[in-house]
Image (cartoon, rainbow over all chains, first blue to last red; front, side, top):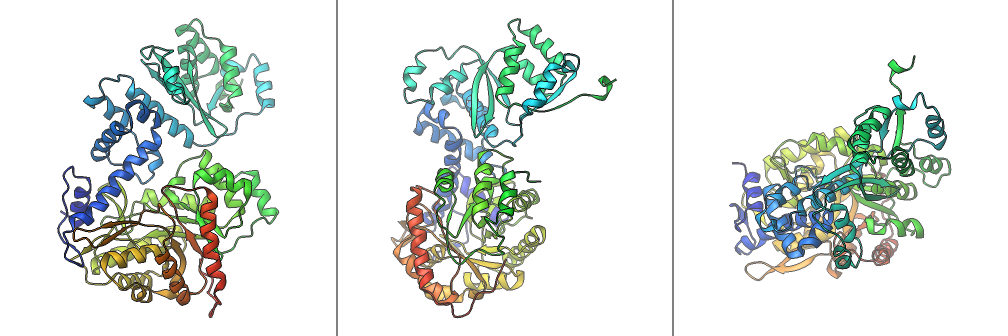
Length: 261
Length: 304
């Protein structure tokens, strides 16, 4: 085994071990010195998770969070030096972490926070101009065939729990009060989008979710609206479209050649 | 590629001409906590430095603010994840990300560490030590060659803060660094705090250590704070925490170093327990007062 493999294994080991071949000027036991590296690695990665998952930490408390994160860091260290996006797999880890079983909504909240970080750092895109949009919406023949590209920050999370209400409650000082006003067992679907420099998280109806997902996958506007209506009779196209336009979500539009004639 | 209208305006309006190297002034590490204040107050500073990896994302607020700050200040990009001392080959995907970032911001300086941080595909998020012997020397030089070739520029290599030494080492750290600089042609980013830490932790004389480095190739200096601990025998063990002001002993070693290298761009680093921006600015001012006292004996050649 290579020297660095032995060193790396010792850094992530649960028990405080020390690789061979280390030297100290005063012949003191190198374990204490090697422990600085062990601590830097583990604490640095736990801190990175704490930065990205503040509500997850608030829900379980700092001590519990750091103990849980420590196990995740050892089991799944980052695969890339880009730590801003570290945390893929943390939600799945939490689902299988028995001490967290008492909070069935915790993993989805973690998923939401990962998506929030991804949305925060997603590529920029200019929204369609008001002029272009105005002409588009006035053309009742062409509009159903339009294919929109949506803002790269846009994400949707379906949960069996009230993740949006939970997350929102934890954005204010009076989280406990706000928490008392809803039932965490009620299913919610979250829409995440970056507007300006902030990521907005809102609860959306199933029809809206289906509509946005179809547009994201490149479906024609008319088809997406029909599908949304068929799964959710309360789907309101005008209101949804208004929300997407105000949020700067519609980034570009194309019309497939086959419908041009 | 960059369609930001502000950027075009800055080129036409000569807000920033493009120097080929950092000015011989003090700079500070750029932290998101300070983005808005910097744009609002336009502090008089020599440059800002960023950690490359923090900006290896597609878009959003980090690029928004860095683009605007870069228009107004010289920039140093400092990598912490390339693992130049690693046993395996360099991560080409990471080099590609670096190339993209350097194309986007055209920094006056690019630097990385004499350390390793990745192994077997896992990123360990620390600057880890390697033994100083022929095999490490060959590997480090090969990696620096690849970096300079891929990025089409000279890079600076930073001396490490270490807590252990290796029985397998056959060279001192300064001798190793001299040889790397000579063979690869890279510059030296002399981290004076790291030098102080290395000398305390391994019981070397700091003045001897500094004088043994390739001082003609020092292109930038780093200053930071450390934390204090003790080893198993109760001897002082300093930890490179970047979480406190620059210590008096490090300011003294900085003055000693400047006597040998002349005026050199100097960064105040702070990555933990980040204070209000004026606190960092005051440390940068202190460094500039020391720099201004110097009478350059030999003007430094432009190096970039």
